[in-house]
Image (cartoon, rainbow, N blue to C red):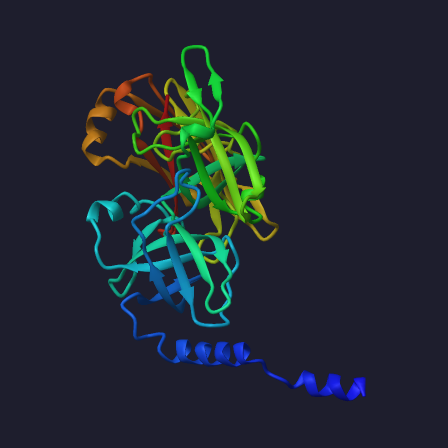
Length: 365
């Protein structure tokens, strides 16, 4: 008797389940007929969404006022970055990202002319009828060095309310803890971030702001790296132009041969400091891997220029930059002149076929 009852109940649909099923079917069929409907991109793949924007904010600013709805039964992970079209925008908001690689731009213009802004999914609200994914706007590409390698990740800067924060006592000023922070997706790249890691966050390339990571949370919310930052001082090897803290710790090597280049040059650093020098060594693939070039004079030629063409004549005529060429070795040095600060030198290596290998070097203090 019990077995009969259990089999019968297994096929029984409650009224609420029937209504929910009907609602999901109706939502799916009418999904496009909504002013909030849009076609967004996730990893360059189109996806249908409803973008629900709000003008209200929570007191601690940790809860996003904006949300995304997908079609029924479409699920995405917390920490996913979604590119949502923008129809009202300021050109300046796009200009500040033009020098970044496309994948690290918070705003970009696609090949079809559409304007996109990137958003980070930070929370999911499960509802019986229709789930919402809360999103925050990506507005900074964080850069840091770990184990000599440069890492980058788009994220969302945030500022907490001061009512719940302690005070950090510094040598000159007292600062509220947690006043600056950033949310990043939790992935293999961001797992390399560590406590006391220094980063630069600023649109001011002359006097940027440096921070140290004071806390990292990977569980609030789960799937997001919730980082709190403390203000710290600038250091001599900070790269103001590219917003990279302690750039001298970057183990920079070019020279992996590919389909385009069977020759290259290598350097231990991509930064040239005022009143200092760097030495480059030319290599070629001779069939046994990359080896230092021995027959250099007959087959290769060094060259260089400044990215700022207007300054080139002034700098060279005043001998602010000097170079020394000895076959496969090329040394370039610069004097301690403020007019060189922030400039970029483009060094080239050309073979007898006219093929060119190029690399940029920034000049820092």
